[in-house]
Length: 38
Image 1 (cartoon, rainbow, N blue to C red):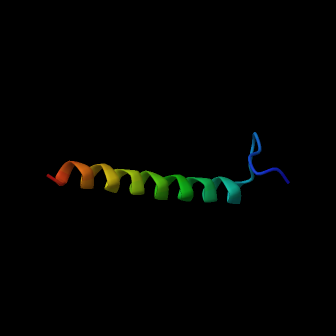
Image 2 (cartoon, rainbow, N blue to C red):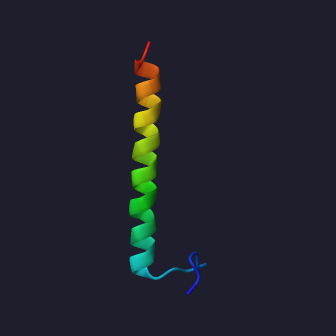
């Protein structure tokens, strides 16, 4: 089973969304921290 399929099953799509959201939040926190720091 390949890691990235053109049409992944529902469970894999949900997992991908969760990982993407976690990555986005991490990046967002990083940007906010770098802006907030003098």
